[in-house]
Length: 88
Image (cartoon, rainbow, N blue to C red; front, side):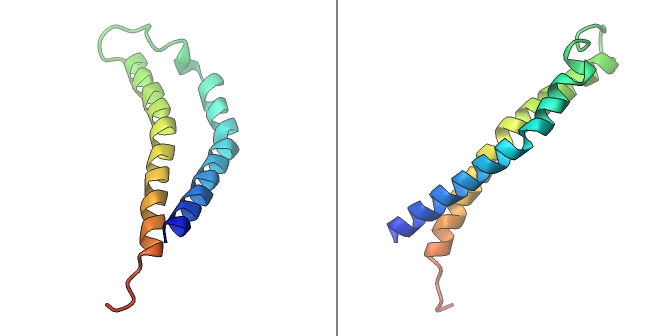
């Protein structure tokens, strides 16, 4: 049972890693071909530039958090797939 959980988890993490690699060109395009990286701190108070800072930070946080959540979901899925109860 433990071997099956580990194998499912390893395959799932590998799949998440491949998905991250596939989508990296899109993240690179969003990161380096937009203007909010340079013009984020030009304004004073709550302006469009502050909104661009929030968008930039949200993009970064999303690219970090989504793979972490996907790996956690894969771990739960691997455990539940092996410990399925048929007598319900």
